[in-house]
Length: 85
Image (tube, one colour):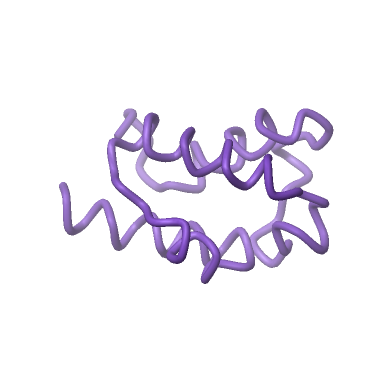
């Protein structure tokens, strides 16, 4: 993981980069990836790859699909980092 203390420090800018249309500061924990942030299936796939590369974890598409909000994705990432870290 990068030098950040929590996944939120890096995950929200990562989501912003993948979408290309939302500022990281505008992304909230309760935002739903598809419904609120407007992410399509290609962006979700890009986010999956970006998360794996940046955080050095393996996350399945099913696991990612189970995380509907930014906060759920952050919690999932934290669990994965505890397992691999």
